[in-house]
Image 1 (tube, rainbow, N blue to C red):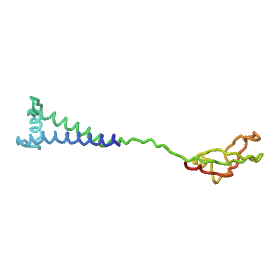
Image 2: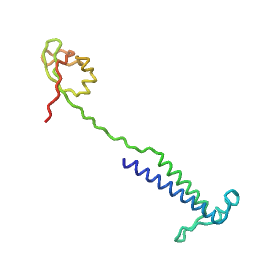
Image 3: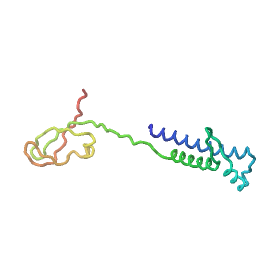
Image 4: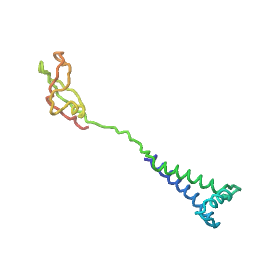
Length: 154
């Protein structure tokens, strides 16, 4: 959540800075009386006039427009980027105690399953589960589910 918001904020800041720099360059040209339709005069104005930031820093207006276009592209690409994190989901399943009956000798025993495991085996439509070794007779059989109980809450 934080990553998406910070990316969106940086995208808005870069886009705003880019638009501001282009507006400053165009307003300097407009204040000087240069026609935007006369491209050769406008191009010459951008290459010859300087913009003073302060502290002795100055540069041509064309560089201000180029920097503005680059920051607009950077800001728009940050805004268009999808940076949603995929949250790790912990699935808590309830364990149930199933009473199983051997199909060979009829011995009954209890095993613990998760509800999703029983559903994946086809329970309640399918009352027989995958092969298990009977603790009494020692044979591999597909025991029947006789009863399913949820554990008591603490």
